[in-house]
Length: 310
Ligand code: ADP
Image (cartoon, rainbow, N blue to C red; front, side, top):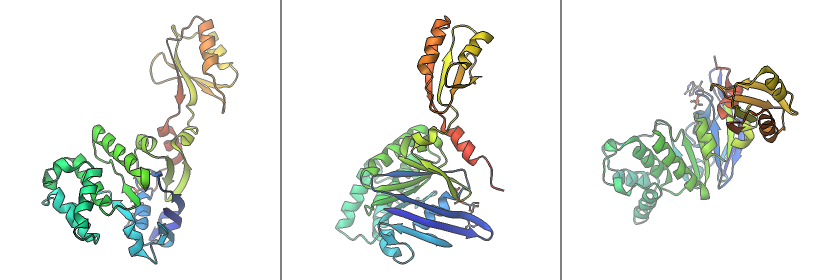
């Protein structure tokens, strides 16, 4: 449903987007993850037809944005980073206005607005003016305008930015519901969001894709992937530390950020959980707590994108 082929956008000497290719299928949520300035918004603006690429091709639902922009744009719902707002309008007025801009005429318009309000649970706010809404509700209005023409493709730029944790949770649920029959591309710099919402993630850095995969696949790049974290009953003696380090498949024994908590990092592919549990028990060291870690997205992200752009 979405296809980017070697997309590039330059501003003077700066390659804001430097040859990005990917696809998004129906039913899939693809996340663009990258630090500020990585080129996420610029890519999304090219895919929505707001700006023209310097080179490359953007296709939506089989239509090329360069040669068939009208047909392509009809298939897209876009939630920009800072949505244009009409603070004096009520929600209902605004959504009717958006539907009209999309060329939807009565009586279909009434039904389209109702459907968009239902999907975003906006009925209770229908007659409130936009200026009086909470940020979370304003974001729902943004979603409703993106959905009003029932597009098969949604492009969402930082959809939960600035929301509180409860509002973020609600918006993420909304996105998951909408994904059932749509292709969704969303950008975020929030790692937990990529983990929680996306089926697949592209990590963008300096205008290029530097890693891609499911969140679980990306986590395997973390040094803490499959590490065993444990709290022995007493401080570990040097001899006990040496025994733990000597376990087959062990790579490194480190103290974690929390006092009394240790981590045994594995060689790639090794699973140390049962061996550590057994050894600690043999040593009369409990353990008081023991966990298998799944890796940390922040570490993966930092390793991939730590070099700041000049
Ligand atoms: P992101 O959305 O990942 O934060 P952007 O796509 O907004 O990143 O920006 C990528 C790079 O392109 C940044 O260095 C930004 O300063 C630059 N850039 C974006 N838009 C313009 C523009 N209209 N003119 C000049 N530079 C721009």
